[in-house]
Image 1 (cartoon, rainbow, N blue to C red):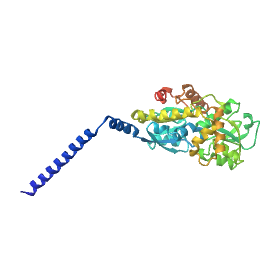
Image 2 (cartoon, rainbow, N blue to C red; image 1 turned 180 degrees about the vertical axis):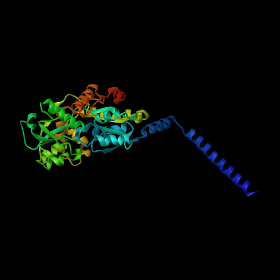
Image 3 (cartoon, rainbow, N blue to C red; image 1 turned 180 degrees about the horizontal axis):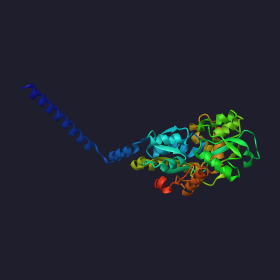
Image 4 (cartoon, rainbow, N blue to C red; image 1 turned 90 degrees about the horizontal axis):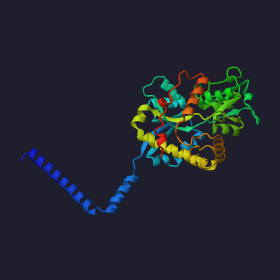
Length: 352
C-alpha cells in the first residue's frame, strides 16, 4: 500500500473518531439535560452579557460634571453593557479633534464645537445626542476679597476668560453685557492663556479676575490666591452648555451604544437629584483624589445652589438657541445652525 493511501486511511480514521466523539458527547448532553439545567444555562448567559468598551474624552475634569462620575461610580454604564475608557482633553477644540479623527468614540464638551464644524460643511459632522449641564459652571474669582461684589466692580480690570470661541469665554461676555459692562471699553479680556493654565497665570499675578471651574476656583481661594465673588452661570437663563456628541456616521452605525450610553447618563442625572452634597461628594471622590472631602462637599453644594444639571438628557431647543445668541454677541457665529440638524434627541427621549 502506498504512503499516499496510508495517509488517506489515517486521515479518515481520525475524522471518524472525531465525529463519533462529538455524537457521543451530544447524546450525553441531551441525556443529562433537565429543565433546571436549561434555566441555569439561560441565566448564566444573561449574567455574562457582553460588555462593549467605548472611548470618551471629556473637556476637562470638573466637579461640574458630577452626574457623569456618578454614572461611572454607581456602575450604570456596566448595567447598560458598556465599559468606559475616559480621558481628559484640554478644551473643546481638542475634544472635537479627537472625535473627528476617530481617536475617541464620544466627545463631551460645549456644543459650540459641533456648530462650528457643522457650519464648515463637513459631511460627517458631530451629532449632539445628550445634554448634561444647563448653565455655565465657572465662577468669577477676584484677586481682592469683595463681600459686596457688583459686576460694575470689574471696570478698568483685566480678566482671564478662556479661549476665544469657547463657551466659558462667551458666557462671561454675555454676563458682563447683561450687567452693563462694555466689553471693548470697560475691561481687558486676556485670551492668550490656555484653559489648563488659567489658574496658574492668575495666581502668578497676571490679571485682576479669572473665570474658573470647580474645584480649581475653591482651591485657588483656599490657597489665598483669590476669592470667589460670583457665579457666571447664575447670570444667564438655562442654556445648552455641556453635551455628548459623536460623528454622524458613528451614531448611525452604533445606535445601540448611543442609547445605552444615554440611559446611563440619565441614571446619573436622576441620582444627583435625590442625594445630598455629602452623598454626591462621596460617590465621585475617586475621580478627585487630590481634593479633600470637606472641599469636595463645599464645591458640590456650590453647584447645587445654582441648579446646573439637567433633569434628563434631552437637549433643550430654547437653550440651544440662547447659546447661538451668546455666540453671535461674542462675534463668533455668522450663521445659525438648525437645531434638528445638529441635535438628535431620539435617544434622550427614549431613556430607561
